[in-house]
Length: 532
Image 1 (cartoon, rainbow, N blue to C red):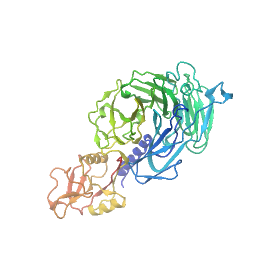
Image 2: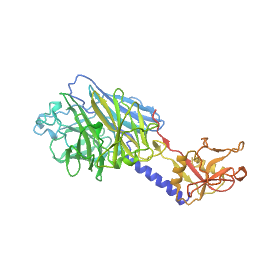
Image 3: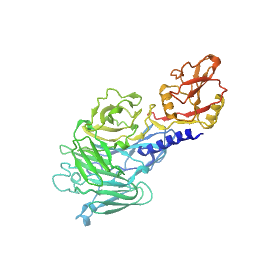
Image 4: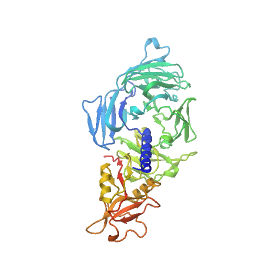
């Protein structure tokens, strides 16, 4: 392969590898379910883990199950989980400073798979429901900024916390060591509190209501959650508040704030400078740490522009009203799809003071949401008894594509040796590729754009005339409808039975004698995720 096509392939591989940093797919996860509602609440918890496979023949193993599960691409399976973190209690010797007290639990669930999966967890007890996006172990971090404690009437406001009264107790931090070795964790800011967490275990500690910025540092990757088992909501009711804390950022990032179902909300911000919660009049905030939307019934982690994706899996939660909130740049409202259907009649709302717009859309089944040409973000919300909960939808790709949700990128390769059309077919097959069939206008334009500047002048493509009818056909058997013949092409049967594509101008096609020599354009189509 000559230097130019090799460069094209390497640049594509680098772009794909970099984009995977911003996906939520992986093969190793550690899941926890926090204490949900007061320990005396008279109903059982119903905790579920939703696993969606991104590739065929995926084996999923769960530590709490006795056997592995086989899934194919686009299939989702739910697992019921009984393990739940217990109450955070204090010892008499530590009554004078309960914020240094922590407990360690082994009630975590370890999930591994042979190929990439995405995971969401839903905790339900009575009317209290919360969901969380679970980040794979390899994409966790060793530093997190603790969100400031919101002023919650009846819980954190109106008097000092009462640690032995669940709904009046402080918020808590949950720190999980997902894997070997032991994690040495320090909570810094107010005081330095060292915690040692063995593999597969979770530590819980109360969060001070003060204004001092606090953060978590560890000697290895850990997961951090911000939670309250029974925060007061309204009319003397309480419910779980729970969110996964995003890792500290290397740079300050911009977080567009969607008008969450048209209701006002507070924003919890925390970074190196300070921790604060604000009733933001702007619809965008900047932070190098945590940015979380707070309602009395919801903690929703915001996604920065720099980590927008192009394709998302949204798991429909039965028995609830399910809503998508989509945020995208105002110039890229076109090209969004829900499943196979283009998003129509969206009713966009401008996020004032930003270049972004937002829209809400109901869904009735598990689906993928994808953009054909740009990145965006999607939040999945659901309603339970007039109480909303939700989380960012799992990102499975950060490479927009006109064909859908791309999991495995296409491969386009121009071979170095010029040879006949028949020999080109065999040479491509030796590379586990096919001579390219350009059976759609979109693929023609896409391929032409990707190959501009290549040192080859023309390449064989996978079309020829039928020996029986003289009609042109594609090797992949797709219909021969969209064509890009150069002017005065093709000629009659005697002028050529095979076709080359020019790599200049608009990449027009010309018929040629199949025995002439040209370089093959080999291709493998991308894998597109379809939800089943």
